[in-house]
Each structure stands twice: as structure tokens, then as C-alpha cells.
Image 1 (cartoon, rainbow, N blue to C red):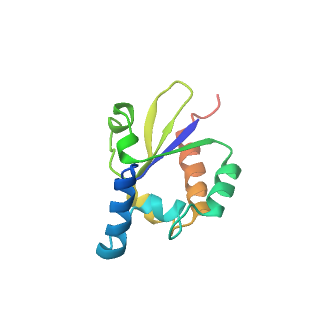
Image 2: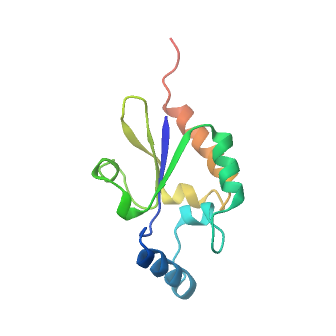
Image 3: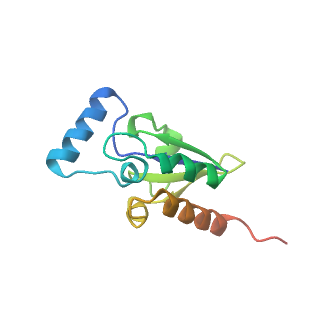
Length: 124
């Protein structure tokens, strides 16, 4: 299982600066950015939480998402997707779900574990 978080921000320098400006002066924010980053850089607790999750976790900006990502039912940014061993990709968490994590990487990982367990078929 692989987890993919997609920010509602561009990945270019212009995209990053635009997001920063809009966050500071217009109150815009990305709920995934709020979890992974502090004021300027990635939170140290983010890397620890991902390591404890024990799954590959890829972060993408909206301009880095492929058609494979954007065609997922319910896709709306920011979000977290999951890709299973067969290559099937599905929506795991919405922006609203991310907001409920209260900017906490540990809370996000707890929710991800719970959602993944819901998707696993029961043993025969």
C-alpha cells in the first residue's frame, strides 16, 4: 500500500511564493500543508510520523498530480489517496478529513491507519 498526499499549491517557485503570499495576506491555506509544514519548512514531527506509519508516503503538489491521480472519484484538493498492490488508486481523505486532524501529523497517521483498515477485505 502506498499513500499519496496532494497539496492544493503549485510546486514551482512561483507556485510556492504565490501560496505563501496568499496564506499570509489572504488567509488562504491548504489543510495538508498545515499538517506537513510549519511557518516555513517541513515539521520535524512529520518525518517521524511517516516513519511510524510504515508505508510509502509520497507528497505531490497539484501540478505534479497525474491523470491517474486526478481521475479518482471524489478527487478535490487537498487530499490523500492510497494505491494498493494491484495499482488501484482511491480517495482516502478529503480536505475536510485533513482539517479534522488539527494540523497534527500523528493524528493524520492515526486516521490513515483507520481508513486503510476499513478498505482491507476481511480474512476468510
